[in-house]
Amino acid sequence: MERFAGKTVVITGGATGIGFAAAQLFASSGAHVVLAGRNSANGEAAQQALREKGGEHLFVQADVSKEEDVKRLMQQAAAHNGRIDILVNNAAMFYESDFLTETSEQWRRVFNVIADGAYLCTKYAAEVMVANGHPGAIVNISSINGYRALNKSSHYNAAKGALDQLTRCTALELAPYGIRVNGVAPGFIDTGLSVIGGVNELETEDFLHYYIGQRKIPLARAGLPQEIATIIAFLASEESSYIQGATIPADGGLSITF
Image 1 (tube, rainbow, N blue to C red):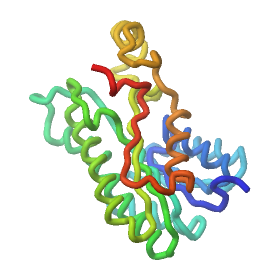
Image 2: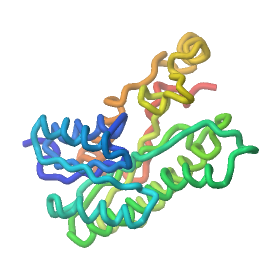
Image 3: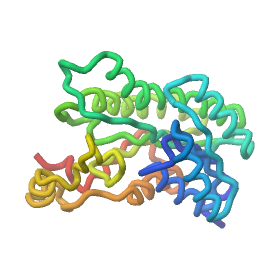
Image 4: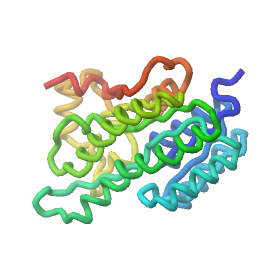
């Protein structure tokens, strides 16, 4: 029997990068995948790619920072297969911004997508899980930035730190309903978010010299979206049935170095 046969999985930011890698893994394991995102072109292309491999997967255009969009997303996801079993809070955004010059609107936009979006999606997905009486799993995609400092990244780092605390608090409150909540904290992963201002940070001289050459990342490479997807699937499966409120670092060892 396939690992996630009959399960409905909602993945925000699911059309690209880590989200799409997770979607492919869940779909190949028998799940009904519901992708959510703001970009309809990317979402529809991702939906088609999944359907070509088999299964009636769904894309819902939604901005996770907007409550009405999230309500509609979860309603459509539940209607798709009569239930929601797994939620992956993956939606995020990033741009470099100097703390003293960025506007409050810029700060709020990043925080709204990462932290508020995860709050709204968790709330409305959990409501469906509880109402249907099905235990579920929620996996939040955080970052090692959630507990480390980085220049021109205070909005993103603060939002990821808030997401880590949301993981712990909802793990406590939702446990009586059989809902497990955990997280993954990636380091440098080769996705679209690696391109900042038109430059791929993974290809810069500084990255190659410091993180690779001097092994600031002990494994001396960036990670792949598929490597994060396997951890997401583990945390969503019964194989991790006794893990609750944990956030697992997946950074090639970066967070253990000075």
